[in-house]
Length: 184
Image (tube, rainbow, N blue to C red; front, side):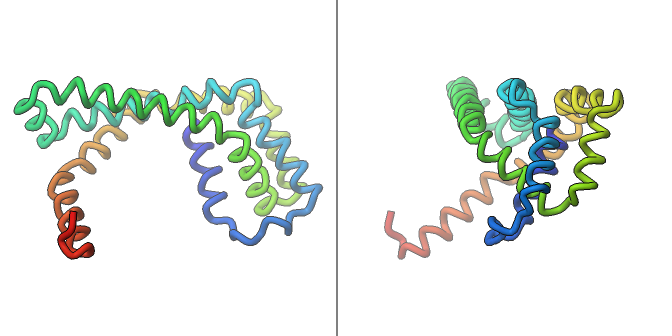
């Protein structure tokens, strides 16, 4: 699922900002059919849950592997539960915001697909998603982020990203304070 979501987001990000009115209506209609196959309206809320929760769990586990975070939690036993509450709240906020934003995102994805694929290509894509393999891909791709190998690789990457985080934040805050003339 995250692969499709990431592809869709990449297509949107790479689209020219001023290209809103240059879409052929036939291409847009074909693209909307494809996006509906990939993100069925009836399954969108469940898809959001399937995407966000495993990523959040992995992020929390990765942070727990960070030496700096372990040190912080060891020095302040109250920090771990406070952190868990914060992460849980942020996850619920992210899920709600994503669900709220999904109609606009889905329409943006359809427009992005319409810009990049011809009506014939969109028909081929639509056709593939109607095959047994295409339907299996759509159904299984929603759960890919919960695959143990993907979670392990993701957790390792996230854990590395947290190394030195406190020092980078301190440097950022110091730099920011300099831009304000040392005023807090």
